[in-house]
Amino acid sequence: MGLVEPEHGIFMGLDTASVKPHERLSAALEAEMDAVNTLIRTRMASDYAPRIPEVTAHLVEAGGKRLRPMLTLATARMCGYAGEDHVRLAATVEFIHTATLLHDDVVDESAKRRGRPTANLLWDNKSSVLVGDYLFARSFQLMVETGSLRVLDILSNAAATIAEGEVLQLSAAQNLATDEDIYLKVVRGKTAALFSAATEVGGVIAGASEDQVRALYDYGDALGIAFQIVDDLLDYGGSTASIGKSVGDDFRERKLTLPVIKAVALADAEERAFWSRVIEKGDQRDGDLEHALELLRNHGTLEATRAEAVAWTEKAKGAIVKLPETEFRDMLHDLADYVVARVT
Image (cartoon, rainbow, N blue to C red):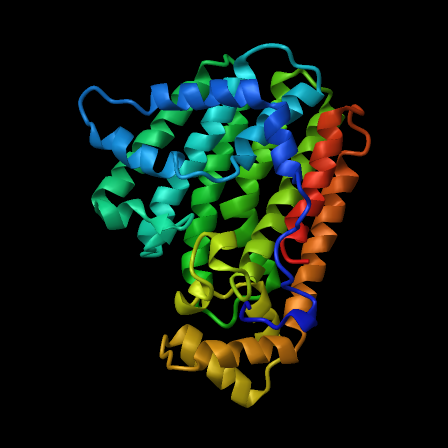
């Protein structure tokens, strides 16, 4: 049983459908994803520094749904693209994502990623940071090979926005003055920026109309926000297997995520003192996580957080209504629903 009781209707486990939307997407894009994976293995090689492919392979080969590169492939295909540059862009997106994960684990001093020891734990912080830098450099080489200045502009801006979001989180994560607007800025930076870039460049490389490219951006932005909100929600009740880290990690790392931000806004003096002690001061004791969960339940912030995730998925689905009616549009529609189904 998870930390949150089933009768509360929030954490009933993952969607039990036999074939999930991301699996359908993966099957439809199997040949292209094989090409992406081959390109990734080729470009993460190094003749002079064998630690680079060792560290990269540890994370790249660890599994994961590969949502971001699949989004690039799917949106390009949905818009009628028949070339090969979408494979380069999908690999670019995955390299950027992997680089940020390597850096994040150093910043957060994490010990587990996708259920496995982190690279910084197995090697060291220096290796993780430098290999992350290498992957960022590789990503820029790949995007330049498409010959599209607009693609370069979109992905380079995304890389800068991700870094900006991470820096903002440093000052906001342990400050009770952080409100939902600041939280959204952090999420748009550290998570949604790469989702929206992944979907937007798919349309650009396919020569889609400006309205379609904007719709793809809006879909990725909303999907990325919903994805991060759900991840934050799962931290207070998902299984370790489903979230790839230990339940309660955000609490132990003193991160002000949306469920806690909502609880702080509704807190009385005694409750605010508790949140100040465990989040701002880092004075955490036995039983504090359980008490935090009780406060979240009492104020209904888990339900309210899920409702916001649902609202963002509805925005994502609404954004692609006018895009070409293909199997890929249908799968992207269902993928948005599945993001929230993880906490249904």
